[in-house]
Image (cartoon, rainbow, N blue to C red; front, side, top):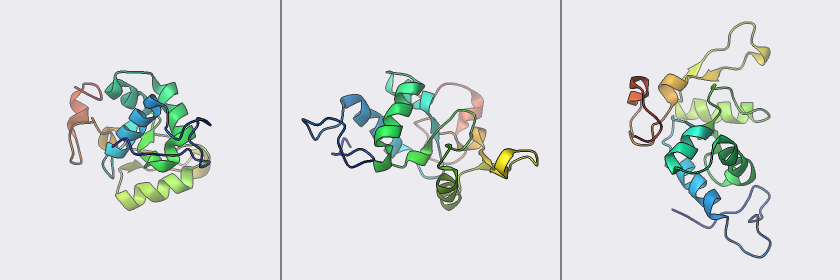
Length: 139
């Protein structure tokens, strides 16, 4: 993949070059692999790459994620991305991503992702991957 991408503000992140940092390209490539209706956590992406950690992946997604299906890279607790909840929810509903309804006491009554059903292992293409059987993001 490694297509030429720009940041969310239309810049490349490097004023002397039009190319993204290599790590950012790799993170965005993984985000593009995630099938519709499925998600990976920031930590899953880092584990799949064998490099960095959740914070580094989150930083890449915040700077450059607008160029890819950003809503498919999520927090491990299934909470919707603060400030982007409604846009993400529209995508999840359009893609039939498994959701858990919000409890009555939940602030804003927004659902969460059903991580057991929505989480993609980076290998299995179909819905309902065998994530419940244990193992990491890339076995």
